[in-house]
Image (cartoon, rainbow, N blue to C red; front, top):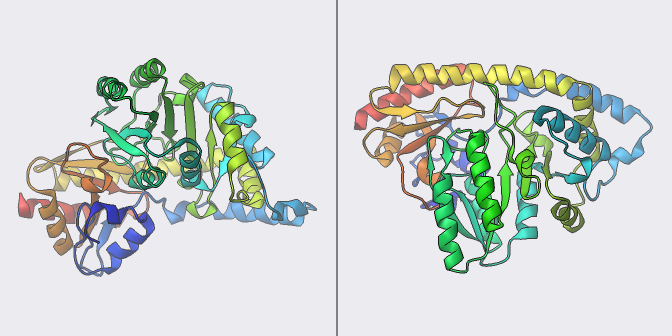
Length: 402
């Protein structure tokens, strides 16, 4: 693989390649050469935290009950019981009134974003996004012919003033701006949580320019510090589409996500899908996890676990990287964002390969903005001993080229 476009073929393939290829990969992904290499790669949860006991119990109960329809297709918006459970849980947390009729259950958040791309994007439409963002969604939008326009970010997230200036310019060009895509809560790769003040400023700008907002909340349930700002759909239900997932909290293999938004958009999404829906059995299991209280209990355990892992990374960074870099202290999610004080990111990648540590660098996430010497350190999947050792190896790699 020789350029950033190659990375957009899929994160799973990249992770596999990074663990098996003997030479460094370019443009933001390095493949460690050592067999025992530690790779700070994808935004994956810790397999040890999958609630297998609760899921096994519920699946056994559901399969024993006289409900044969649970093994059939689930067309349209999804299982009614799950949609009600999601709506009740989200409304309670956000102090809002999300209706089950505003929800479509999807094949993970990626399925929701693909469905939105097909429904909303016409060739030539402009989609705005954070200058550093999830590259998989950029590939999805570009496949539908979108023109991606990056919006600058700072340590607090997307910059409202820059957004307004870009929209003014695009209006002068008579560009068709379709929506702003933002990972406002626990952003990937930077880990930032956009403040409520900035959310309100962005909504005011969206109102002024009559623009839709798509918030990707895939990591938003992983929270360490409270309070969090309200999600954008609760602040602007008339122009926000909210995308969420159970992949980071329950298990990615469930392929269970959901999208909520204005009724006109949600109705179109439910009617136009062609995938015959997600498993009704799995949907009903997730619904029972929520309504029985198992999900909230599990989420408390998960958040405590990932907070410990985040703290391992922060402690190791202080010991090994303080002389050469600065980093974020995320309030949630799976990522610490490290920025080199000086030096070349490519040289650090090459040195990391020799020291047995790999990572996704800023070019992998760059939507077209100003280059930055940043490194995403994902702590979700690795165990704590690997995290500490990996950071120490990274520190040696950075020092070797500083």
